[in-house]
Image 1: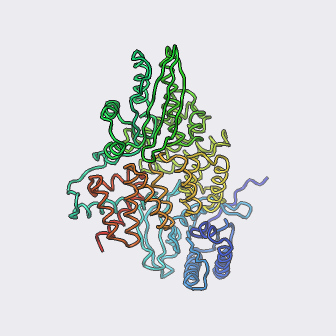
Image 2: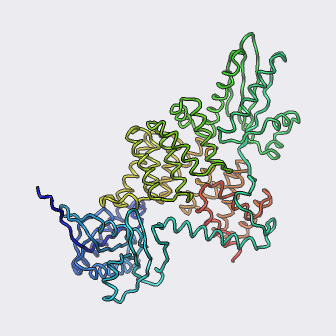
Image 3: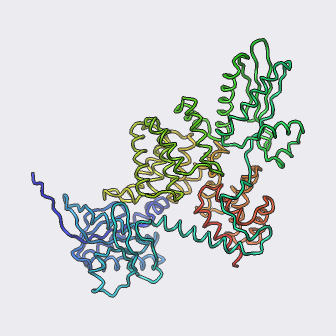
Length: 638
Protein backbone atom coordinates (compact mmCIF):
# COMPACT_ATOMS: atom_id res chain seq x y z
CA UNK A 1 0.00 0.00 0.00
CA UNK A 2 1.29 3.44 -0.90
CA UNK A 3 1.11 5.48 2.32
CA UNK A 4 2.54 8.68 0.85
CA UNK A 5 0.32 11.75 1.21
CA UNK A 6 -0.07 13.81 -1.96
CA UNK A 7 0.39 17.39 -0.72
CA UNK A 8 0.70 20.62 -2.67
CA UNK A 9 0.13 24.36 -2.48
CA UNK A 10 -3.09 25.34 -4.25
CA UNK A 11 -5.31 28.37 -4.76
CA UNK A 12 -8.86 27.51 -3.73
CA UNK A 13 -12.04 29.44 -4.52
CA UNK A 14 -15.27 28.57 -2.71
CA UNK A 15 -18.58 30.04 -3.94
CA UNK A 16 -21.94 29.56 -2.24
CA UNK A 17 -25.48 30.83 -2.87
CA UNK A 18 -26.91 33.23 -0.28
CA UNK A 19 -30.25 32.03 1.25
CA UNK A 20 -30.53 29.15 -1.19
CA UNK A 21 -32.98 27.31 1.09
CA UNK A 22 -35.37 30.26 1.15
CA UNK A 23 -35.36 30.42 -2.65
CA UNK A 24 -35.98 26.67 -2.88
CA UNK A 25 -38.85 26.82 -0.40
CA UNK A 26 -40.44 29.67 -2.35
CA UNK A 27 -40.10 28.18 -5.84
CA UNK A 28 -37.96 25.08 -6.24
CA UNK A 29 -38.21 24.73 -10.02
CA UNK A 30 -37.40 28.39 -10.73
CA UNK A 31 -34.48 28.32 -8.28
CA UNK A 32 -32.94 25.23 -9.86
CA UNK A 33 -33.38 26.75 -13.33
CA UNK A 34 -31.71 30.02 -12.33
CA UNK A 35 -28.92 28.26 -10.46
CA UNK A 36 -28.14 26.35 -13.65
CA UNK A 37 -27.90 29.67 -15.52
CA UNK A 38 -25.43 30.97 -12.92
CA UNK A 39 -23.51 27.71 -13.13
CA UNK A 40 -23.16 28.19 -16.88
CA UNK A 41 -21.69 31.66 -16.30
CA UNK A 42 -19.16 30.19 -13.86
CA UNK A 43 -18.20 27.32 -16.17
CA UNK A 44 -17.57 29.77 -19.01
CA UNK A 45 -15.29 31.85 -16.78
CA UNK A 46 -13.48 28.78 -15.45
CA UNK A 47 -12.41 27.91 -18.99
CA UNK A 48 -11.07 31.44 -19.43
CA UNK A 49 -9.20 31.53 -16.12
CA UNK A 50 -8.19 27.84 -16.07
CA UNK A 51 -10.08 26.86 -12.97
CA UNK A 52 -11.12 23.25 -12.28
CA UNK A 53 -14.00 22.18 -10.03
CA UNK A 54 -13.01 19.49 -7.53
CA UNK A 55 -16.10 19.39 -5.31
CA UNK A 56 -19.70 20.64 -5.18
CA UNK A 57 -22.37 20.81 -2.48
CA UNK A 58 -25.69 21.45 -4.21
CA UNK A 59 -25.57 25.23 -3.94
CA UNK A 60 -21.80 25.57 -3.49
CA UNK A 61 -18.74 24.89 -5.62
CA UNK A 62 -15.03 24.45 -4.84
CA UNK A 63 -12.52 25.34 -7.53
CA UNK A 64 -8.72 25.02 -7.85
CA UNK A 65 -6.73 27.63 -9.84
CA UNK A 66 -3.15 27.64 -11.08
CA UNK A 67 -2.55 31.17 -9.79
CA UNK A 68 -3.93 33.62 -7.20
CA UNK A 69 -4.42 36.30 -9.88
CA UNK A 70 -6.50 33.94 -12.01
CA UNK A 71 -8.70 33.03 -9.06
CA UNK A 72 -9.31 36.65 -8.04
CA UNK A 73 -9.99 37.84 -11.59
CA UNK A 74 -12.38 34.93 -12.13
CA UNK A 75 -14.21 35.70 -8.85
CA UNK A 76 -14.56 39.39 -9.73
CA UNK A 77 -15.75 38.63 -13.25
CA UNK A 78 -18.30 36.14 -11.92
CA UNK A 79 -19.76 38.56 -9.34
CA UNK A 80 -19.95 41.32 -11.96
CA UNK A 81 -21.83 39.09 -14.40
CA UNK A 82 -24.17 37.87 -11.67
CA UNK A 83 -24.91 41.48 -10.71
CA UNK A 84 -25.68 42.31 -14.35
CA UNK A 85 -27.91 39.27 -14.60
CA UNK A 86 -29.82 40.22 -11.44
CA UNK A 87 -30.32 43.76 -12.72
CA UNK A 88 -32.33 42.41 -15.66
CA UNK A 89 -36.11 42.33 -15.25
CA UNK A 90 -36.07 39.03 -17.13
CA UNK A 91 -34.25 37.26 -14.29
CA UNK A 92 -36.90 35.31 -12.43
CA UNK A 93 -34.88 34.39 -9.32
CA UNK A 94 -32.06 36.77 -8.45
CA UNK A 95 -29.45 34.56 -6.80
CA UNK A 96 -26.55 36.13 -4.92
CA UNK A 97 -23.22 34.50 -4.10
CA UNK A 98 -20.48 34.76 -1.50
CA UNK A 99 -16.91 33.93 -2.54
CA UNK A 100 -13.86 33.08 -0.45
CA UNK A 101 -10.34 32.60 -1.90
CA UNK A 102 -7.30 31.17 -0.12
CA UNK A 103 -3.87 29.87 -1.06
CA UNK A 104 -2.45 27.16 1.17
CA UNK A 105 -1.44 23.58 1.76
CA UNK A 106 -3.91 20.92 0.58
CA UNK A 107 -4.01 17.15 0.26
CA UNK A 108 -5.13 15.42 -2.92
CA UNK A 109 -7.26 12.44 -1.91
CA UNK A 110 -8.89 10.49 -4.72
CA UNK A 111 -9.27 13.62 -6.84
CA UNK A 112 -10.71 15.69 -4.00
CA UNK A 113 -8.73 18.40 -2.19
CA UNK A 114 -8.89 18.58 1.61
CA UNK A 115 -6.95 20.23 4.41
CA UNK A 116 -6.47 23.67 5.97
CA UNK A 117 -6.08 25.37 2.59
CA UNK A 118 -9.62 24.31 1.69
CA UNK A 119 -11.07 24.86 5.18
CA UNK A 120 -9.85 28.46 5.32
CA UNK A 121 -11.27 29.16 1.87
CA UNK A 122 -14.65 27.88 3.11
CA UNK A 123 -14.45 30.08 6.19
CA UNK A 124 -13.54 33.10 4.06
CA UNK A 125 -16.63 32.41 1.96
CA UNK A 126 -18.79 32.35 5.11
CA UNK A 127 -17.18 35.64 6.16
CA UNK A 128 -17.87 37.30 2.81
CA UNK A 129 -20.80 39.63 2.18
CA UNK A 130 -23.57 38.78 -0.30
CA UNK A 131 -22.22 39.67 -3.78
CA UNK A 132 -18.80 39.96 -2.18
CA UNK A 133 -15.36 38.34 -2.22
CA UNK A 134 -13.11 37.83 0.80
CA UNK A 135 -9.53 36.65 0.38
CA UNK A 136 -6.70 35.59 2.66
CA UNK A 137 -3.44 37.55 3.09
CA UNK A 138 -1.57 34.86 1.17
CA UNK A 139 -3.72 35.67 -1.88
CA UNK A 140 -3.64 39.43 -1.20
CA UNK A 141 0.19 39.49 -1.20
CA UNK A 142 0.27 37.95 -4.66
CA UNK A 143 -2.47 39.96 -6.33
CA UNK A 144 -2.10 43.47 -4.88
CA UNK A 145 0.93 44.41 -7.02
CA UNK A 146 -0.58 42.85 -10.13
CA UNK A 147 -4.12 44.25 -10.14
CA UNK A 148 -5.83 47.62 -9.80
CA UNK A 149 -8.54 46.35 -7.45
CA UNK A 150 -9.48 48.06 -4.19
CA UNK A 151 -9.09 46.07 -0.99
CA UNK A 152 -10.42 46.51 2.54
CA UNK A 153 -8.30 45.12 5.40
CA UNK A 154 -10.49 43.14 7.84
CA UNK A 155 -7.64 42.27 10.16
CA UNK A 156 -6.99 38.87 11.73
CA UNK A 157 -10.08 36.66 11.96
CA UNK A 158 -10.30 33.42 13.90
CA UNK A 159 -12.91 30.77 13.18
CA UNK A 160 -12.64 27.40 14.92
CA UNK A 161 -8.95 26.39 14.93
CA UNK A 162 -8.12 28.55 11.90
CA UNK A 163 -6.72 32.06 12.29
CA UNK A 164 -6.21 34.11 9.15
CA UNK A 165 -5.75 37.68 7.97
CA UNK A 166 -8.65 38.58 5.67
CA UNK A 167 -9.32 41.23 3.04
CA UNK A 168 -12.48 42.17 1.14
CA UNK A 169 -12.26 43.00 -2.55
CA UNK A 170 -14.39 46.12 -2.93
CA UNK A 171 -16.45 45.72 -6.08
CA UNK A 172 -18.21 48.95 -5.06
CA UNK A 173 -17.63 51.42 -2.19
CA UNK A 174 -20.77 50.34 -0.32
CA UNK A 175 -19.11 47.01 0.50
CA UNK A 176 -16.61 48.62 2.83
CA UNK A 177 -17.10 47.35 6.37
CA UNK A 178 -15.28 46.84 9.63
CA UNK A 179 -15.09 43.54 11.49
CA UNK A 180 -13.85 42.82 14.98
CA UNK A 181 -10.70 40.74 14.93
CA UNK A 182 -9.70 37.47 16.58
CA UNK A 183 -12.69 35.32 15.81
CA UNK A 184 -15.82 37.36 16.55
CA UNK A 185 -18.37 36.08 14.11
CA UNK A 186 -20.82 38.11 12.08
CA UNK A 187 -23.52 37.13 14.56
CA UNK A 188 -21.53 38.51 17.49
CA UNK A 189 -20.69 41.61 15.46
CA UNK A 190 -24.33 42.26 14.68
CA UNK A 191 -25.43 41.78 18.27
CA UNK A 192 -22.68 44.13 19.41
CA UNK A 193 -23.93 46.73 16.94
CA UNK A 194 -27.46 46.25 18.26
CA UNK A 195 -26.22 46.81 21.80
CA UNK A 196 -24.45 50.00 20.74
CA UNK A 197 -27.58 51.17 18.92
CA UNK A 198 -29.65 50.47 22.00
CA UNK A 199 -27.32 52.49 24.19
CA UNK A 200 -27.42 55.33 21.66
CA UNK A 201 -31.18 55.18 21.53
CA UNK A 202 -31.55 55.34 25.30
CA UNK A 203 -29.32 58.40 25.33
CA UNK A 204 -31.54 60.05 22.70
CA UNK A 205 -34.92 59.29 24.23
CA UNK A 206 -33.79 60.01 27.74
CA UNK A 207 -33.19 63.63 26.79
CA UNK A 208 -36.59 64.03 25.19
CA UNK A 209 -39.36 65.85 27.04
CA UNK A 210 -41.62 62.83 27.01
CA UNK A 211 -44.38 62.66 29.58
CA UNK A 212 -43.66 60.26 32.50
CA UNK A 213 -39.98 59.99 31.65
CA UNK A 214 -37.09 61.31 33.71
CA UNK A 215 -33.41 62.03 33.24
CA UNK A 216 -32.01 59.58 35.77
CA UNK A 217 -30.17 56.46 34.67
CA UNK A 218 -31.65 53.21 35.97
CA UNK A 219 -29.81 49.91 35.50
CA UNK A 220 -31.68 46.72 34.62
CA UNK A 221 -30.75 45.24 38.01
CA UNK A 222 -32.29 48.19 39.87
CA UNK A 223 -35.60 48.10 38.02
CA UNK A 224 -38.52 46.65 39.94
CA UNK A 225 -40.60 43.89 38.46
CA UNK A 226 -43.33 46.38 37.57
CA UNK A 227 -45.49 44.53 35.08
CA UNK A 228 -47.19 41.55 36.69
CA UNK A 229 -49.32 38.80 35.23
CA UNK A 230 -50.62 35.24 35.36
CA UNK A 231 -51.18 35.31 39.09
CA UNK A 232 -52.85 32.48 41.04
CA UNK A 233 -54.87 33.17 44.19
CA UNK A 234 -55.15 30.18 46.53
CA UNK A 235 -58.07 31.06 48.77
CA UNK A 236 -58.03 29.58 52.31
CA UNK A 237 -59.82 26.24 51.99
CA UNK A 238 -63.19 25.86 53.69
CA UNK A 239 -63.86 23.21 56.32
CA UNK A 240 -67.36 21.75 55.95
CA UNK A 241 -66.88 19.61 59.06
CA UNK A 242 -66.73 20.41 62.80
CA UNK A 243 -64.14 23.03 63.77
CA UNK A 244 -61.98 20.26 65.22
CA UNK A 245 -60.91 19.64 61.64
CA UNK A 246 -60.03 23.24 60.74
CA UNK A 247 -56.39 22.17 60.89
CA UNK A 248 -56.92 19.87 57.89
CA UNK A 249 -58.15 22.65 55.60
CA UNK A 250 -55.59 25.13 56.91
CA UNK A 251 -52.73 22.64 56.65
CA UNK A 252 -53.45 21.87 53.01
CA UNK A 253 -53.83 25.56 52.12
CA UNK A 254 -50.58 26.52 53.85
CA UNK A 255 -48.72 23.65 52.23
CA UNK A 256 -49.83 24.62 48.71
CA UNK A 257 -49.10 28.31 49.24
CA UNK A 258 -45.54 27.55 50.34
CA UNK A 259 -44.57 24.69 48.00
CA UNK A 260 -46.18 25.63 44.68
CA UNK A 261 -44.57 29.05 43.94
CA UNK A 262 -40.99 27.79 43.40
CA UNK A 263 -42.12 25.06 41.00
CA UNK A 264 -44.76 26.55 38.69
CA UNK A 265 -44.60 29.36 36.12
CA UNK A 266 -47.36 31.31 37.85
CA UNK A 267 -47.17 33.98 40.51
CA UNK A 268 -48.90 32.92 43.73
CA UNK A 269 -50.52 35.48 46.04
CA UNK A 270 -48.81 35.37 49.48
CA UNK A 271 -50.65 33.70 52.35
CA UNK A 272 -51.47 36.86 54.38
CA UNK A 273 -52.74 38.68 51.32
CA UNK A 274 -54.96 35.77 50.27
CA UNK A 275 -56.59 35.70 53.71
CA UNK A 276 -57.17 39.43 53.54
CA UNK A 277 -58.75 39.11 50.09
CA UNK A 278 -61.12 36.44 51.34
CA UNK A 279 -62.08 38.46 54.40
CA UNK A 280 -62.71 41.59 52.32
CA UNK A 281 -64.82 39.67 49.83
CA UNK A 282 -63.32 41.58 46.88
CA UNK A 283 -65.20 41.66 43.60
CA UNK A 284 -63.93 39.83 40.55
CA UNK A 285 -63.12 43.18 38.88
CA UNK A 286 -61.09 44.20 41.92
CA UNK A 287 -59.19 40.92 41.84
CA UNK A 288 -58.33 41.47 38.18
CA UNK A 289 -57.55 45.16 38.28
CA UNK A 290 -56.22 45.76 41.79
CA UNK A 291 -54.42 42.47 42.38
CA UNK A 292 -53.80 41.32 38.79
CA UNK A 293 -55.19 37.87 39.57
CA UNK A 294 -55.99 35.57 36.66
CA UNK A 295 -56.76 32.27 38.40
CA UNK A 296 -58.43 31.30 41.68
CA UNK A 297 -58.04 27.96 43.41
CA UNK A 298 -60.72 27.21 45.98
CA UNK A 299 -61.21 24.09 48.05
CA UNK A 300 -63.59 22.44 50.53
CA UNK A 301 -62.74 19.77 53.06
CA UNK A 302 -65.30 17.27 54.39
CA UNK A 303 -64.30 14.80 57.11
CA UNK A 304 -66.14 11.54 57.69
CA UNK A 305 -64.78 9.07 60.26
CA UNK A 306 -61.08 8.55 59.44
CA UNK A 307 -61.20 9.97 55.91
CA UNK A 308 -61.53 13.42 54.42
CA UNK A 309 -62.68 14.43 50.98
CA UNK A 310 -61.12 17.41 49.21
CA UNK A 311 -63.03 19.21 46.46
CA UNK A 312 -60.89 21.56 44.34
CA UNK A 313 -61.87 24.07 41.65
CA UNK A 314 -59.48 26.08 39.46
CA UNK A 315 -61.19 29.10 37.90
CA UNK A 316 -60.03 31.41 35.08
CA UNK A 317 -61.62 34.69 36.16
CA UNK A 318 -60.93 36.47 32.87
CA UNK A 319 -62.94 33.90 30.94
CA UNK A 320 -65.18 32.96 33.87
CA UNK A 321 -64.33 29.37 33.03
CA UNK A 322 -63.59 26.42 35.30
CA UNK A 323 -60.29 24.97 34.10
CA UNK A 324 -60.49 21.91 36.32
CA UNK A 325 -62.39 20.44 39.23
CA UNK A 326 -61.68 17.32 41.24
CA UNK A 327 -62.69 15.26 44.26
CA UNK A 328 -60.24 13.05 46.10
CA UNK A 329 -60.17 11.14 49.37
CA UNK A 330 -57.35 10.72 51.90
CA UNK A 331 -56.69 9.39 55.38
CA UNK A 332 -56.94 12.01 58.14
CA UNK A 333 -54.15 10.37 60.13
CA UNK A 334 -51.78 10.59 57.16
CA UNK A 335 -52.15 14.30 56.46
CA UNK A 336 -48.53 14.93 55.40
CA UNK A 337 -48.68 12.26 52.70
CA UNK A 338 -52.05 13.65 51.61
CA UNK A 339 -50.59 17.17 51.32
CA UNK A 340 -47.76 15.91 49.13
CA UNK A 341 -50.17 14.05 46.85
CA UNK A 342 -52.53 17.04 46.60
CA UNK A 343 -49.58 19.28 45.77
CA UNK A 344 -48.41 16.88 43.05
CA UNK A 345 -51.89 16.51 41.55
CA UNK A 346 -52.54 20.26 41.50
CA UNK A 347 -49.14 21.04 40.00
CA UNK A 348 -49.78 18.45 37.30
CA UNK A 349 -53.14 20.06 36.53
CA UNK A 350 -51.56 23.53 36.27
CA UNK A 351 -48.79 22.16 34.06
CA UNK A 352 -51.25 20.36 31.79
CA UNK A 353 -53.72 23.23 31.39
CA UNK A 354 -51.46 26.28 31.57
CA UNK A 355 -47.68 25.89 31.54
CA UNK A 356 -46.55 22.67 29.79
CA UNK A 357 -49.30 20.72 28.10
CA UNK A 358 -49.99 17.11 29.01
CA UNK A 359 -47.13 15.47 27.05
CA UNK A 360 -44.32 17.62 28.42
CA UNK A 361 -45.75 17.43 31.93
CA UNK A 362 -45.69 13.64 31.71
CA UNK A 363 -42.11 13.76 30.37
CA UNK A 364 -41.01 15.61 33.49
CA UNK A 365 -42.79 13.08 35.68
CA UNK A 366 -41.45 10.02 33.83
CA UNK A 367 -37.85 11.21 33.59
CA UNK A 368 -37.48 12.51 37.14
CA UNK A 369 -39.20 9.96 39.33
CA UNK A 370 -37.39 10.90 42.54
CA UNK A 371 -39.41 13.61 44.21
CA UNK A 372 -36.35 15.66 45.25
CA UNK A 373 -34.91 15.64 41.73
CA UNK A 374 -38.31 16.37 40.18
CA UNK A 375 -38.75 19.43 42.40
CA UNK A 376 -35.18 20.56 41.77
CA UNK A 377 -35.71 20.48 38.00
CA UNK A 378 -38.97 22.39 38.26
CA UNK A 379 -37.40 25.03 40.50
CA UNK A 380 -34.54 25.48 38.04
CA UNK A 381 -37.09 25.90 35.25
CA UNK A 382 -38.90 28.61 37.21
CA UNK A 383 -35.60 30.33 38.02
CA UNK A 384 -34.57 30.32 34.35
CA UNK A 385 -37.83 31.98 33.36
CA UNK A 386 -37.92 34.48 36.19
CA UNK A 387 -37.60 38.14 35.29
CA UNK A 388 -35.60 38.58 38.48
CA UNK A 389 -32.98 35.85 38.14
CA UNK A 390 -30.98 35.11 41.28
CA UNK A 391 -28.44 32.83 39.60
CA UNK A 392 -25.89 33.57 36.90
CA UNK A 393 -25.96 31.65 33.63
CA UNK A 394 -22.82 29.80 34.73
CA UNK A 395 -24.40 28.81 38.06
CA UNK A 396 -27.47 27.49 36.27
CA UNK A 397 -25.27 25.59 33.82
CA UNK A 398 -23.32 23.99 36.68
CA UNK A 399 -26.50 22.87 38.43
CA UNK A 400 -27.78 21.22 35.26
CA UNK A 401 -24.33 19.75 34.70
CA UNK A 402 -24.41 18.05 38.10
CA UNK A 403 -27.85 16.60 37.35
CA UNK A 404 -26.68 15.43 33.92
CA UNK A 405 -23.54 13.75 35.22
CA UNK A 406 -25.65 11.73 37.65
CA UNK A 407 -28.27 10.94 34.98
CA UNK A 408 -26.40 10.75 31.65
CA UNK A 409 -28.87 8.28 30.18
CA UNK A 410 -31.76 10.65 30.88
CA UNK A 411 -32.64 12.59 27.68
CA UNK A 412 -34.21 15.51 29.52
CA UNK A 413 -31.20 16.04 31.79
CA UNK A 414 -29.03 16.14 28.64
CA UNK A 415 -31.41 18.59 26.97
CA UNK A 416 -31.51 20.90 30.00
CA UNK A 417 -27.74 20.89 30.34
CA UNK A 418 -27.22 21.59 26.63
CA UNK A 419 -29.83 24.35 26.70
CA UNK A 420 -28.15 25.98 29.72
CA UNK A 421 -24.86 26.08 27.79
CA UNK A 422 -26.68 27.61 24.81
CA UNK A 423 -28.25 30.33 26.95
CA UNK A 424 -24.83 31.23 28.31
CA UNK A 425 -23.60 31.61 24.73
CA UNK A 426 -26.70 33.46 23.52
CA UNK A 427 -26.61 36.02 26.31
CA UNK A 428 -22.89 36.58 25.75
CA UNK A 429 -21.64 35.03 29.00
CA UNK A 430 -19.38 32.52 27.24
CA UNK A 431 -15.59 32.87 27.20
CA UNK A 432 -15.30 30.53 24.22
CA UNK A 433 -18.38 30.32 22.02
CA UNK A 434 -16.94 27.68 19.72
CA UNK A 435 -15.99 25.27 22.51
CA UNK A 436 -19.35 25.69 24.24
CA UNK A 437 -21.38 25.13 21.07
CA UNK A 438 -19.38 22.08 20.03
CA UNK A 439 -19.63 20.72 23.59
CA UNK A 440 -23.39 21.10 23.78
CA UNK A 441 -23.86 19.43 20.39
CA UNK A 442 -21.64 16.56 21.55
CA UNK A 443 -23.92 16.20 24.59
CA UNK A 444 -26.98 16.10 22.33
CA UNK A 445 -25.33 13.60 19.95
CA UNK A 446 -24.55 11.27 22.84
CA UNK A 447 -28.06 11.62 24.25
CA UNK A 448 -29.61 10.86 20.84
CA UNK A 449 -27.49 7.73 20.50
CA UNK A 450 -28.89 6.56 23.86
CA UNK A 451 -32.43 7.89 23.34
CA UNK A 452 -33.17 7.91 19.59
CA UNK A 453 -36.89 8.54 20.22
CA UNK A 454 -36.45 11.74 22.25
CA UNK A 455 -37.79 14.32 19.81
CA UNK A 456 -36.67 17.51 21.57
CA UNK A 457 -33.01 16.49 21.26
CA UNK A 458 -33.27 16.51 17.46
CA UNK A 459 -35.22 19.77 17.28
CA UNK A 460 -32.88 21.63 19.62
CA UNK A 461 -29.75 20.26 17.94
CA UNK A 462 -31.04 21.37 14.54
CA UNK A 463 -31.66 24.91 15.81
CA UNK A 464 -28.20 25.17 17.37
CA UNK A 465 -26.36 23.71 14.38
CA UNK A 466 -28.18 26.00 11.99
CA UNK A 467 -27.42 29.02 14.16
CA UNK A 468 -23.72 28.15 14.45
CA UNK A 469 -23.15 26.08 11.31
CA UNK A 470 -19.64 27.49 10.81
CA UNK A 471 -18.41 25.31 13.67
CA UNK A 472 -19.49 22.09 11.94
CA UNK A 473 -17.89 22.32 8.50
CA UNK A 474 -14.50 20.68 9.16
CA UNK A 475 -15.30 17.95 6.72
CA UNK A 476 -15.79 19.85 3.47
CA UNK A 477 -18.65 17.55 2.43
CA UNK A 478 -20.66 19.20 5.20
CA UNK A 479 -21.38 22.49 3.47
CA UNK A 480 -23.84 24.92 5.07
CA UNK A 481 -26.42 23.61 2.62
CA UNK A 482 -25.78 19.98 3.61
CA UNK A 483 -25.98 20.86 7.31
CA UNK A 484 -29.26 22.69 6.80
CA UNK A 485 -30.78 19.81 4.81
CA UNK A 486 -29.91 17.41 7.64
CA UNK A 487 -31.33 19.84 10.19
CA UNK A 488 -34.60 20.06 8.24
CA UNK A 489 -34.88 16.30 8.21
CA UNK A 490 -34.21 16.12 11.97
CA UNK A 491 -36.90 18.72 12.70
CA UNK A 492 -39.43 17.04 10.45
CA UNK A 493 -38.84 13.68 12.16
CA UNK A 494 -38.93 15.28 15.63
CA UNK A 495 -42.39 16.71 14.98
CA UNK A 496 -43.62 13.37 13.67
CA UNK A 497 -42.26 11.60 16.78
CA UNK A 498 -44.03 13.81 19.32
CA UNK A 499 -46.47 16.26 17.73
CA UNK A 500 -47.79 17.37 21.14
CA UNK A 501 -44.48 17.91 22.94
CA UNK A 502 -44.31 21.60 23.82
CA UNK A 503 -40.50 21.91 23.81
CA UNK A 504 -40.16 19.97 20.55
CA UNK A 505 -42.69 22.23 18.83
CA UNK A 506 -41.08 25.38 20.21
CA UNK A 507 -37.52 24.60 19.09
CA UNK A 508 -38.81 23.38 15.74
CA UNK A 509 -40.61 26.69 15.29
CA UNK A 510 -37.43 28.53 16.30
CA UNK A 511 -35.51 26.56 13.67
CA UNK A 512 -37.95 27.42 10.88
CA UNK A 513 -37.99 31.07 11.92
CA UNK A 514 -34.19 30.97 11.89
CA UNK A 515 -34.12 29.88 8.25
CA UNK A 516 -36.78 32.42 7.29
CA UNK A 517 -39.63 29.95 6.81
CA UNK A 518 -42.48 31.67 8.64
CA UNK A 519 -44.98 29.44 6.87
CA UNK A 520 -43.67 26.44 8.82
CA UNK A 521 -42.78 28.34 12.01
CA UNK A 522 -46.20 29.96 12.52
CA UNK A 523 -48.45 26.89 13.00
CA UNK A 524 -45.91 25.35 15.36
CA UNK A 525 -45.72 28.34 17.70
CA UNK A 526 -49.50 28.67 17.47
CA UNK A 527 -49.80 25.11 18.73
CA UNK A 528 -47.30 25.82 21.52
CA UNK A 529 -49.43 28.69 22.78
CA UNK A 530 -52.65 26.69 22.54
CA UNK A 531 -51.14 23.79 24.51
CA UNK A 532 -49.67 26.01 27.22
CA UNK A 533 -50.88 29.62 27.24
CA UNK A 534 -48.67 30.36 30.25
CA UNK A 535 -45.49 28.53 29.39
CA UNK A 536 -42.14 30.34 29.46
CA UNK A 537 -42.92 34.01 29.05
CA UNK A 538 -40.88 34.68 25.89
CA UNK A 539 -43.02 32.34 23.78
CA UNK A 540 -45.92 34.72 23.33
CA UNK A 541 -43.46 37.36 22.22
CA UNK A 542 -41.80 34.90 19.83
CA UNK A 543 -45.20 34.20 18.28
CA UNK A 544 -45.50 37.86 17.30
CA UNK A 545 -41.90 37.88 16.15
CA UNK A 546 -42.61 35.05 13.68
CA UNK A 547 -45.14 37.19 11.85
CA UNK A 548 -42.97 40.28 12.06
CA UNK A 549 -40.13 38.28 10.51
CA UNK A 550 -42.44 37.38 7.65
CA UNK A 551 -43.38 41.07 7.32
CA UNK A 552 -46.98 40.00 7.88
CA UNK A 553 -47.88 43.09 9.88
CA UNK A 554 -51.61 42.38 9.62
CA UNK A 555 -51.27 39.03 11.36
CA UNK A 556 -48.66 40.37 13.78
CA UNK A 557 -51.08 43.11 14.86
CA UNK A 558 -53.81 40.53 15.26
CA UNK A 559 -51.52 38.55 17.59
CA UNK A 560 -50.62 41.72 19.50
CA UNK A 561 -54.32 42.48 19.98
CA UNK A 562 -54.94 38.92 21.17
CA UNK A 563 -52.24 39.45 23.79
CA UNK A 564 -54.05 42.59 24.91
CA UNK A 565 -57.36 40.72 25.09
CA UNK A 566 -55.87 38.13 27.46
CA UNK A 567 -56.22 40.94 30.02
CA UNK A 568 -53.44 39.94 32.43
CA UNK A 569 -50.95 42.76 32.81
CA UNK A 570 -47.97 41.03 31.29
CA UNK A 571 -49.82 40.04 28.12
CA UNK A 572 -51.38 43.49 27.78
CA UNK A 573 -47.97 45.10 28.19
CA UNK A 574 -46.37 42.93 25.50
CA UNK A 575 -49.33 43.42 23.19
CA UNK A 576 -49.24 47.19 23.49
CA UNK A 577 -45.48 47.35 22.94
CA UNK A 578 -45.76 45.18 19.83
CA UNK A 579 -48.74 47.15 18.55
CA UNK A 580 -46.85 50.40 18.99
CA UNK A 581 -43.98 48.98 16.94
CA UNK A 582 -46.31 47.67 14.23
CA UNK A 583 -48.15 50.96 13.99
CA UNK A 584 -44.86 52.78 13.53
CA UNK A 585 -43.65 50.31 10.89
CA UNK A 586 -46.89 50.73 8.95
CA UNK A 587 -46.56 54.52 9.03
CA UNK A 588 -49.27 55.19 11.62
CA UNK A 589 -46.95 57.31 13.72
CA UNK A 590 -49.63 59.21 15.60
CA UNK A 591 -51.30 55.95 16.68
CA UNK A 592 -47.91 54.48 17.58
CA UNK A 593 -47.11 57.43 19.86
CA UNK A 594 -50.53 57.16 21.51
CA UNK A 595 -50.12 53.42 22.11
CA UNK A 596 -46.66 53.84 23.58
CA UNK A 597 -47.93 56.70 25.76
CA UNK A 598 -50.66 54.35 26.97
CA UNK A 599 -47.97 51.89 28.10
CA UNK A 600 -46.12 54.59 30.04
CA UNK A 601 -49.28 55.85 31.69
CA UNK A 602 -50.97 52.53 32.37
CA UNK A 603 -47.90 50.93 33.93
CA UNK A 604 -46.36 54.09 35.39
CA UNK A 605 -43.10 53.52 33.54
CA UNK A 606 -40.46 55.76 32.07
CA UNK A 607 -39.37 55.20 28.47
CA UNK A 608 -36.21 53.49 29.68
CA UNK A 609 -38.12 51.24 32.05
CA UNK A 610 -40.63 50.26 29.37
CA UNK A 611 -37.87 49.12 27.01
CA UNK A 612 -36.05 47.30 29.81
CA UNK A 613 -39.24 45.51 30.84
CA UNK A 614 -39.90 44.59 27.23
CA UNK A 615 -36.43 43.06 26.79
CA UNK A 616 -36.83 41.04 29.98
CA UNK A 617 -40.15 39.57 28.90
CA UNK A 618 -39.13 38.71 25.37
CA UNK A 619 -35.97 36.89 26.45
CA UNK A 620 -34.16 37.95 23.28
CA UNK A 621 -32.78 41.32 24.21
CA UNK A 622 -30.45 42.07 21.31
CA UNK A 623 -33.07 41.43 18.63
CA UNK A 624 -35.80 43.46 20.30
CA UNK A 625 -33.39 46.17 21.39
CA UNK A 626 -32.63 46.87 17.74
CA UNK A 627 -36.34 46.59 16.85
CA UNK A 628 -37.37 49.12 19.43
CA UNK A 629 -34.42 51.34 18.60
CA UNK A 630 -35.55 51.62 14.98
CA UNK A 631 -39.16 52.09 16.04
CA UNK A 632 -38.61 55.00 18.35
CA UNK A 633 -36.16 56.70 16.04
CA UNK A 634 -38.99 56.69 13.53
CA UNK A 635 -41.18 58.35 16.18
CA UNK A 636 -38.89 61.21 16.98
CA UNK A 637 -36.74 61.87 13.94
CA UNK A 638 -39.55 62.37 11.43
